[in-house]
Length: 459
Image (cartoon, rainbow, N blue to C red; front, side):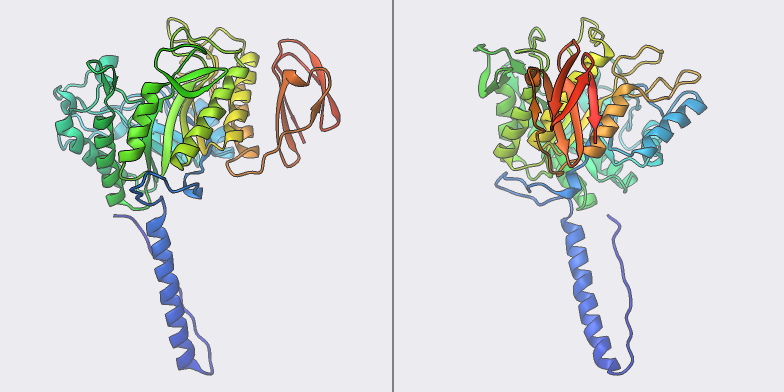
């Protein structure tokens, strides 16, 4: 149920009949090729699980995910300010279909409520974003509840009952048909509700069954739709830990074997995928420890990305990435903003070097003036909506280091060369001081005096 088609005409005097016939034949062939290419866009179904390789259709680059409070609501002037910032440097924007600022899309079978989702999609369109939808979570009636929405975390994060997998897939199809300009879909979020306590592992069979139904439905709606999963957290354990340790490891620790098992099963049994989605943190699952330190621990993002690309052959998306441990209230306020930016920039370098095709920053949600790590000042505030340092980093990095650009490691010399991280593309160089002290280094032969945790762009 997609939208396709294009035609044009040709004429020439002289050998008119022959020219028209030849042109008609050429036009028919060209049109067939266009339609064939359009039908192929978004990847092939591959039964061997090898994936479709890197494709421009899924090389989205650096973007962010909308959360509970975003710039689609609040003070009018503040909303216009944020919209102007995002429009000036468009980037991918991701939104969940239920929760995270959006109401229940189907409170009872066949009755739809798309008001909130319409508003978020309209904001993404207005800011020239490449829109992405994460197909999570499920209406209550699909998971043993009734028509009343239970917004508790326990209820929201419950998976659909197997008897309703097909109903969820049909909802995904309705949503894809409603927004025909949206071409990128992530199936579910972090295997929510799919952990099997009895077996002590993920119910990857159930998730894959759901994924395959959704995949088929989205491709039925439009072959150009790009679909990916499994959006599982690549949790890691400390170095030397024997608890669920896998061979995917480094100085930062080892990825939990249960996540590896789930991903491996999905990759072997999926009906198709245009990209692979994971999320994760540089710190450990238990205790939120950073090994060897917060900067060196970001190597996990490169190691995991490289392993995923080699193991599956699919373009790799990071739906979320975290570098700063949260406190008991799930807040990340322990670092200064400059320190936070420096570690994030280092993590983004690791992802870029490893060839990640997309990465979405999980935008923190606040309504007040104090918002560590936020992309913009809350639009709930008069005079709000202005960009914050993390938005500057995200937009500049996305512009200068998009997927596929030729990267190089600058020549860093001097006594402090191991205290900085650096990345370059063309004449643009990004240097990060990984120390909480002032230092001097030479980068490509040019001396740089860097403030503590400073991020410096040159070129």
